Length: 221
Image 1 (tube, rainbow, N blue to C red):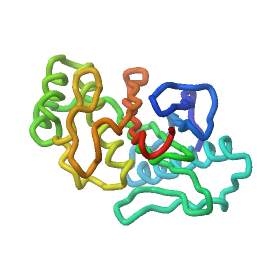
Image 2: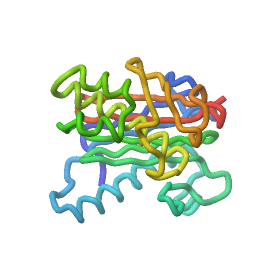
Image 3: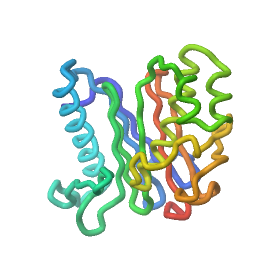
Image 4: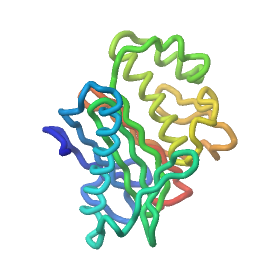
């Protein structure tokens, strides 16, 4: 299954700045929208999973000239973190939501990626268990779609962090906190130091929110 009329590549360095090409000091992020996912839940999930795998395979073929499907085998840990099995395999992360799929690839850093379709939610009900007090204040300061985007921005950053470390949802998300300008201000000890984490966040066409998280002391130097 191929993307429809929306597809972008982003290459990000350790500071979150974007570049035109992939290199050992950047990570590649691929984002695509598909138009033919069915309404049947089971079939839809199957096609989403296959599509994000296809997106990852296409990215690997572009980024590594010697890559073949048998070069690296996609596997996952007991907690569900996907990884490539094989010699000198790069780090990867994948995500899908609605008609959107995203993947990230890097040679020298563990990263996590999360993408979520923007839709209305009762964000106030999430504030106690999911959001830090500073995030809750920022999210609830606006209404409508902007509130939905802010809520998902905070959510996707947290998901991306947890996915980067392969922890699954074993961390109390409310202990991870961001201020209004996007800087990380609170973090459980298990996730390292606040200063070690960097993020790339983008709201695409006000339709989806994308977040990528990585630790600067773990690569992309």
